[in-house]
Length: 543
Ligand code: VG1
Ligand code: CO
Image 1 (tube, rainbow, N blue to C red):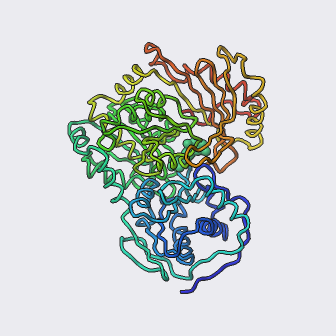
Image 2: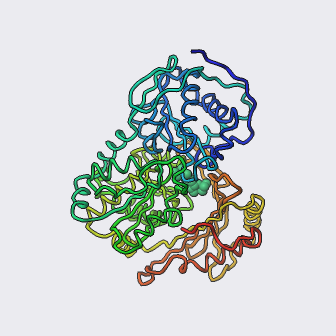
Image 3: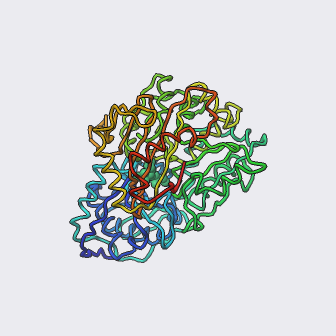
């Protein structure tokens, strides 16, 4: 087997976004596109000769082909061993778990996460570093810089490797070790949660539905929820991972997880519903006819963490992304621990966890996780909630309502405008920037503006600065509007508007969020001139 060095020319668009490089499958399938990016990773990370890499993906269309290319390129670039999930499968949190457990140099995860898949859908690739977490900005920036000058890539001339059963084969000098994608992860979950208590809960008639959305968590959820915890077979729905996710959009929210939402809001609803996304790092939590916002979920988990064996000694700190509501801040304050506010994207939590500053992290985008790995973790969050329910013997709704009664409610919603013309979306952001000076001190509707800025963050561990992370309009009464452009979409621009108001009055906690936030929504549309500039009258997704 010989190593071939192939000449190439750069592509100008290989800049990783919020979470890796995401493009249409058709873009990734252009000759040399995948190879260029993978070689740019290898050229930037300076892995020592003989290093070990983890490799796997969410099973979406093009996963298998890409895995073969990356294996041959890893062999040609001096890696000594690659741990690859059976069938090329590894959920994002499981990949993080494996990188940490076997102390590998890093890992490559193939996924476009919650974006649709299939030949006309999206594909993605991201690099995770030694701590198991997404590469920080200085690494992704180095990869991008490299991609702009790349002139050649190296690949081993070899037949494809069989990945269908665990075991070890060789690719030139490199070992290819096919691992069971579920077992290490399931073992980690058992070490954190009170499986006996959850088993008793389920045996006592507590009913749950988990929607794997035909994405990667199917095999994980079946093993953990049905096999190890004894939930009746069929509790996990849409459990078969499919390359096109059954034509769905594997994003666990009220719009895209509609199969589950119908069940949980329908007659004879189960007590608990949950869903996860394409690569298994997101979670949606539902009670019987009751939706838990991800921001509230983080706060409730923090407030109840000591009921969970893995967190029984308490939390050292909490971190949340800037657009996430301040519900967790209130819990942190009550616990006397710090709460950090970071830019959007899990890569900003890694340093805080490595430095032992935080135990729990969360994002409003259905992401929660802890220092057990360095990614957000969908099934982990589901198990955390089941553990809380088992410990408190209350319904999901009761738990959340009691939480609001104690801490007040951070009423919250996100409106997404997907697939906007890029110019129009940029125009909205520019207008908001230009308005900063004139807005402070004025009244917008019934609220007075306290501050306007574009969020920037200095990492407290390594001092790195990240700017332009979202426009914030903060009001004197503590309410807030945030505008941000998505960094994960692949078509036009997606503008996200995040709305938050604090409600201490228990008699108003039952109000629907859209109604309670109606005046803020109105203000957001006015200051951004969104309808006028984009021609859109409604958001694509309301959460
Ligand atoms: C979105 C979310 C962000 C999340 C990111 C990756 O990014 O808002 O909170 O970290 O997706 O999640 P953006 O830039 O589109 O707003 V996943 O599940 O795609 O790995
Ligand atoms: Co994801």
